[in-house]
Every structure is written in structure tokens, then in C-alpha cells.
Amino acid sequence: METNSDSLDFPRWFSRSDATHNVARGIMQYGPIARTPLAQIFNLSQGALSRITSDLIYDGVIEEMPAGSTQAGRLPQGFDLRESSERRGRPQTALRIREDSHAFVGVNIHDGAITVSEVNTMCRPIGSDITETVSNTAPQAVVEQITRMVRELVAASPDAPAPTALGLSLGGHVEDDRYVTFAPFLYWDSSVDLGGMLQRDTGIPTKVFNDLDSVLLHECWFGDAIGVPRFAVITMGAGVGYSISDHGDPIDNPDKSYGLAGHVLIDPEGPRCSSGHIGCSQCLTSDSIAEEYSGIMGRVTTFEEFSHDLRANRPQARRLAERTCYRLGVLVATVSNLAMPSRVLVSGESSFIAKKNREFIRKGIDAYRHSQAAPVEFSIPRFSWRLWSDSAAARAIATYIS
Ligand SMILES: [Zn+2]
Image (cartoon, rainbow, N blue to C red; front, side, top):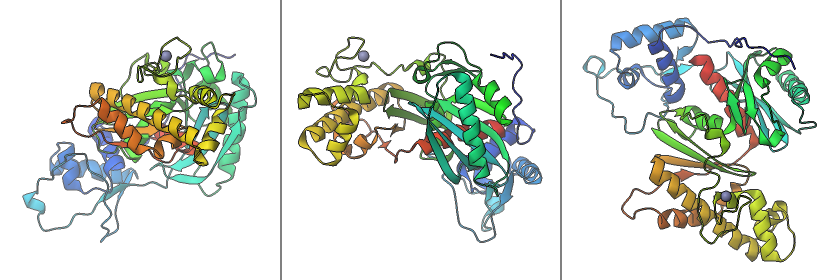
């Protein structure tokens, strides 16, 4: 395999002062937003902010909303607008990102399949996504398959601008937004220059990211967690994932992609995991649920059979789903008590179980949370792999504007 120690060229939308990049990011997250709250959020004088926004308008990064528009974005939690005397009485034009000038490609590799999708600069979908099973897990074969899928995706939206950049996310450990050093679902056991190989084959500037961090950043910049100071995501599916952000940035730690919340005790009477723990968070994984369901049914069953029975409201499946959600609630409480996020998002391919059993999650939380502590806010958005591939693109957008 070709090795290349040079850093990959990755474009930036514009190159100006840190304050200008921060304001652009603020307009991306909180926009449409008027100049007065924007100046207050970034602690800038009206004059300094006006110079920055003029530069950004000149660079084609932002634009003023049409006169009379009342559309407004979400402001940071707890934000209190101080009325500026010079502006009082005069409605201000809000600013927004020029979102249709660029397109970004997102790729997510998950549990034996690849999803590719395209978005604009505000991470809004362009066209349909494409999902295929991974035909061969050898690195070069994966790169060739993704390259072909990306070409098909781009060809299907001929009116969209040529892709500015590509973001790829996967469950595993990534270094320098480029080298994959651990990817259990692909059985890769040595460092793979996935970013370099993809950039060479697709011709699109590429960055590679951890999948959970991407989902987290997507929520903080474009989704439910805009303006939330600290935000956690827990995923359930083939594995159990956990990540947390502070003011929109995923908290970094070199060991985080090794599934650090994967074996936390959540049910002293739960099933035994492959490492020998009783009732650790592995009992939220699809394999563990299938095994537990097999025990209940007295024969070998699959996770698909469990979810089928759950949809059919079979009592054995329903009770296991309720127990699973109580356990998930205990994990949410543990995360909330120790890391103190203002909100927790539950995602992952088996989060549909959680969606139907919110009251059991609440019971699990309540059992391990002080009765006078604020209730834990949690949300369970409708899951789709497209959300994960779009999230990979979101990280490429965040890098492009930073
Ligand atoms: Zn365990």
C-alpha cells in the first residue's frame, strides 16, 4: 500500500482572523441571527462585528435575509439579549449562511454496509442517499466501492455544485482525521490511510472521523443540540457508544473510540457479557438482546425475530424491550450524574426500542437520580443511516469554515 506522510490538502472557505471564523460559525449555528445578539454572543462591539460581517458578505459566506423575514435560528441556552440603545426601535436584518453555493459528500461505514449522501453548506440533504453492503472488507476494495458509490451519488444530482469536500465516519479509532488504526467492523488490524486513499481515488478533499463524534457535532451545529452547553450521545446497536461535547466541540481523548462506556454496570441482575461482567452495558447490544430473547423463548432467536415480535406486540418481546429501556435509563442517569450534560441524545440502529418505551427509560433514570435534581432531558430522533452519513459531511463543513 502506498504510504504518504504529507498532510492532505483540505480547503478552507476563507482565511481571515479567528474572530471572523468564530462569527461565521456562530451564524451557521444560530442563524438567521441579527447583528446585535451576534455581537453580544462573541463579546464584540457593534463596529467590530459590522466589519466582520461586511467581510463575510464580501467573501460570499453569508447574506442578509430578505427584508420583512421573521425567520430566526435558535440562540444559546440561557442567552439574554441586552437591548442596544443605538439600535432600539429599528428592526435589524438577520444574517444567514449562503447555503447553496457548495455541496459536501458524507460517507458512513457501519456494520457491514456503506451509506453515502450529499448535503449543502447548512447540511440540508441534496438528493437521495445510497446504501450498499460492503462487498469486500480489504481496504483497497472498500475505497473502490466508496469511490464508485460517490460517483453515482454526484451524477444523480447534476444541478448541485461539484463537491467541495468529503467526510467519512466509521466506528473505530482515527488519527489525524485520516488514518484508521482500529476498525473492528471492518476487521482491519493495522493502520490504514483511508483518507489519503479516498482523496486520491475520488479526487475530492477528504477527512475521516469517528462516527459518534460526527453525530455529536451534527447535533451541535445543525440539530437538536444547537446552543446546548454540554451534550451527550448514547448509541445502541451492534455496540454501545458514548460521546460528549462541550460548547459544540466533541471532547477529545485518545482512548475514547475504544468504547469506554461499553462495560458500565447497569443491571446487577442482567446477563453476562463476553468479558464476564454481569449486567454491564453490553446488554444493550443487538447480540445480547438476541441471546436474552433466546433464553426467554427457549430456542435460538435472532435480533430481527425479536424486533418483529416487538412490532407484533408479543408480550415476551415487549417485556424484554421494557427491561432494556430501564437499563438504558440507568446508563443515561450514570452519564448525567457524572458528566452533567444538559441534554442526552439516544441514537443507533436499535434506538427504535427506546422510542417506544420512554416511560421505562424515565424509570431507569429516576432510580439513580436524586429526586430534587433537574429531570434529565433526553431525545430519541428517528434513526436513519443517512443521518450518520450527513453527520460525516457536517464535520467536513465544520472544518471547511473553521
Ligand atoms: Zn461487560
